[in-house]
Image 1 (cartoon, one colour):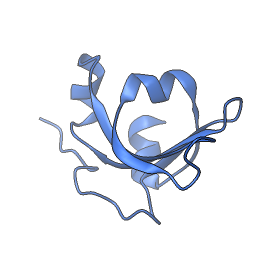
Image 2 (cartoon, one colour):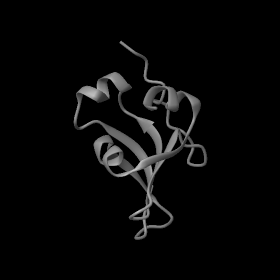
Image 3 (cartoon, rainbow, N blue to C red):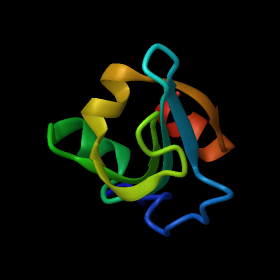
Image 4 (tube, helix red, strand yellow):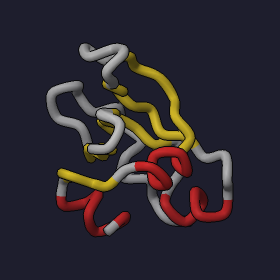
Length: 88
């Protein structure tokens, strides 16, 4: 079984990755994943713990978000090297 490199919660000022939807103004800062990438690929309900910012909550709220919702609506705008290696 592959190790989950993103299991430890990152600090708010140093997320593992940031995804943005420029069209809607939403931003997801990924702080933690519950599963490794291989397990996530098999689970349509896999979640990431994120700081989510939007036009409605510009300072952001923290909580779990479905991975598929982020990847289906946003593009990666920054990430650490390990994240880029795992998620491209």
